[in-house]
Length: 249
Ligand code: BV8
Image (cartoon, rainbow, N blue to C red):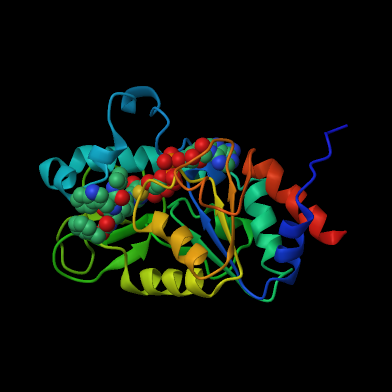
């Protein structure tokens, strides 16, 4: 019989009474779907490469084919993954509260596949191709096992993955909507993120300063653990469904 997880009744009450819940997710929410987190050692032939060095415009300029090989490997990995109970719990929560804004740093599209609506993809989507040079072509594409650098169908320039690389600014609409939601929400849930990458990691502080109840869901502590209202230590695929169960009582 799985042990009963007891949550602080004030947290459950705050979530139940919330007018607006803002959720920020990171790679940890997809870990139980078998998608390695950003800071876990990469697998196989990618083990010796640091994602922080690969996910940059400089790496792409230097060797676009090499960077495309990494993204195609990740696309394949993600396309074989399924949403987990944590993704599904967040999709259910959206129908239990008056308003829920889900901001994800993840590029895997698993929240949408779990049924979450109006997801803000703060760092883009790994399945989109975008023109690297001139035009504003940006389209979701199917996985392919090509090895060449794809070209932009609109202008023939090289295409790049439609994600936000380190050193690149967050799409303005996503940035503004996320900041506004963090400043407006009554409860802020930070799920499965090491809270190291900015400006995403700054959303929790905005919510905190605006007087929201801030809750971290993570098996490990992060830089924000000390300043948040509460930390629910555990895997999101376990904690989130139980948090929803507690709402029902
Ligand atoms: C920006 C898309 C303005 C790509 C990603 C110097 C020059 C330029 C910028 C900077 C600089 N110094 C600092 C910066 C800012 C930089 C930054 O923050 N760097 C960090 C490393 C210090 N940020 C940027 O560059 C951003 N843009 O600032 O623009 C600007 C522009 C120019 C100059 C200055 C400023 C853009 C950042 C976007 C990068 N792109 N992804 C791709 O995916 O290929 S970020 C990448 O990291 C992923 O999206 C990932 O989501 C994200 C954050 O990591 P996490 O999600 O937190 O994942 P992580 O592995 O770290 O942690 C997992 C957590 O899950 C852990 O805590 C673990 O305990 C937990 N966990 C594990 N299992 C579970 C679990 N939790 C729950 N349940 C489980 N089962």
